[in-house]
Image (cartoon, rainbow, N blue to C red; front, top):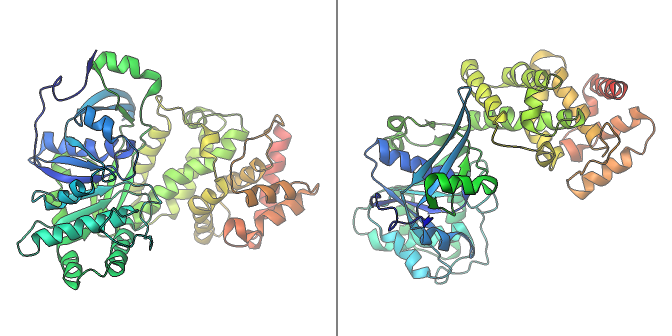
Length: 470
């Protein structure tokens, strides 16, 4: 079988490099690079991507061995139908490792065709480190490296008109563009760079806050031999993704004209404020995920798909989403219902075995951020408790007892202080005392939940019903 590269696969085109990409991991290759590929196919975008490897070791060498070529494997449900196909990605030119050649990295800033910089350096990637003392040597952090690159670009283009740059960070943190810009301004101050650079940055660089949404499981180890046989090439960079994709970009109107999403018929939204969309994703997608885990697991389910299809648990998930979460959100109902239906379809993906126990990692903090706001908002709006979200909270507390309905140990994974607290509190033989201590623990919830009228009684009732049925 032939190795995949531009010698063995000759039907590829080289275009101007318009996108600089910090990160070579599964998500960017299965999301951003896939999007740029479609732009090139369906619009006059006509741009390639240059990858920058953000850490010392990574996939850069393998990407270069394949000349940037690889396949995306799309598997899942779309409009109720199974979807399974591969798509060749040819828009990636290659990868540069700045740890090996810092000068070559800086020279990327001289590219007159460059229009966009994208990144995904993990949630911990957008930070400022005062130990990055100088740009004369390779900075430690991603914002430090980006500052050095932009300063090199400023020195090259300051006396001539260069294209404005749009920066689209994909890190899963709130206000990611604002935080990246803030870190860069701190480096400018630390390195005592000229005021002219700051002015140039404000006038020529647009930092966008973004929200990305696509499940990208990555390399399909279990089916790679069949995939390679089907495509006819030995591709060691195949990326598996679901069909669903969403990119919400908070930006000036001008960016929409550069990024031909509408023409390419892709799910990319340009908005003046992405906060409602972030809330929608966190409450519906992540919230439903977190709410279903203890109920599904303690009911004997193992996976998300199983939980969504079992007569015992499917109604619970649907009622949580449509009856208790959606009514608390501030977006058009029709839009919320469409999104919720897509979430349920994604949960039922027959090609992904998403284990409930994997999602259960750090469930307390997840519940606090993803589910509790919906519960509290529902109470505020309706002056009564949401029965299914309360059931989820009751089962969550029971889940942290560390035993399932067959009295087998549950492999809990959380902060040790949280695990120690639950281990101690479940020593009480009086359920009333146990639940009282859990609800009033503000370390867990950020507030005293025992002050909510009848909440303790309803949780005790749910736990007793569970015990009686098991």
